Amino acid sequence: MKHTALIVLLAAALSGCSRESAPGTPAPQAAAPESPYLTLAPGEEGFVAVPLSRISDKALYVNVPKEEAPLVQLLAIRDGDGNVRIAFNTCQACSPSPRAWFAQRDDGRFVCQNCGNRFPPEAVGAAARGCNPIPVPGVRETPDALLVPAASLDPVRPAFAAWDGPRR
Image 1: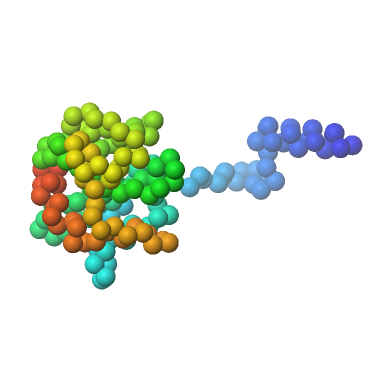
Image 2: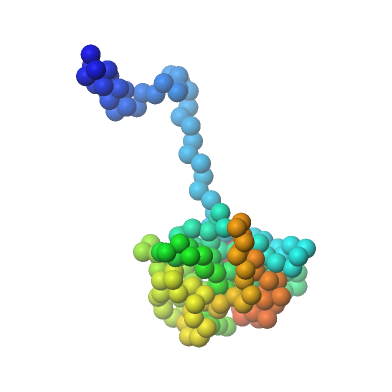
């Protein structure tokens, strides 16, 4: 008897039958994936709060616009050890080229869209020279967010004046 019940359950699973939906009822839709782009503004305390819940092993591009000034984009990622990393999404060596920004490849590595330099997530925000994303000074981590000082954005805005990176 146990084998018969198991066979019936397997047959139902393989045929797509479900006790949750009646005939003619549309199948539930999968949740849309979260966008890799997020637009944030500094809060009253003078920080841009990047939610830790949005940071994964896939790049999160955080747009920080300011009236009458170039948009700044941050690049946030969790590296292979689970550490949260953040940097400006512009290349120190290639700026002010419009293509001085980084895209994540399928293998998880980042590539400069101007010169082709490649590096792993562990290097995001780690190097202060060369073809690397510019580190963000003064970032603090709370249990819920990375707090980026708004004052650290303005000195870097000129590097984004000709920048043509993704803004979605």
